[in-house]
Length: 171
Image 1 (cartoon, rainbow, N blue to C red):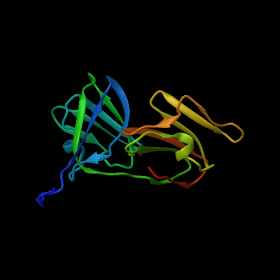
Image 2: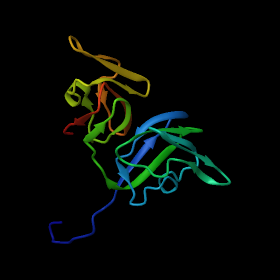
Image 3: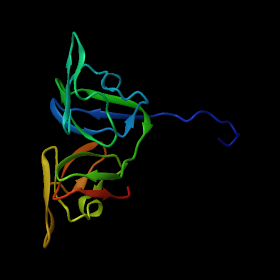
Image 4: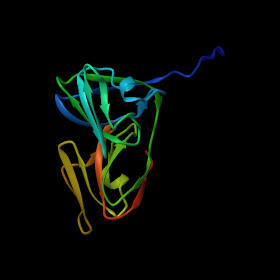
């Protein structure tokens, strides 16, 4: 501050207002211990699915499944039984570089601001993007067509690629 006082770095905080049912989200703020049991302390969340992994919460046993930790680079389908709020605190992560494989890739969008799809995705190998209830497809003559026009912070997206490729952008 102006008087020369110093303190340790503060942690960031984030909140996700879930709808009842499945929510496609991403996590830019995560604690150092990013195990699923430490991140998902809200018992309203009954299941989480990401690309190729999933876990369910069983009251007598805890979290069971192949998804053991939450990362800032992936998108997640989070199932909420009644639509509550998930809070996280920890380190702020901004992931802007992805190695995509052929087919569907479930990735995060961790920028602070929304961005137009055409400003972020200039790779011709990426042919479509699906979000929760929205989608867009690339046409070489017309550009991006569909109801998905922006990528939004805290959301997850399925990026479909015609080959192994990379996606890099600036927030």
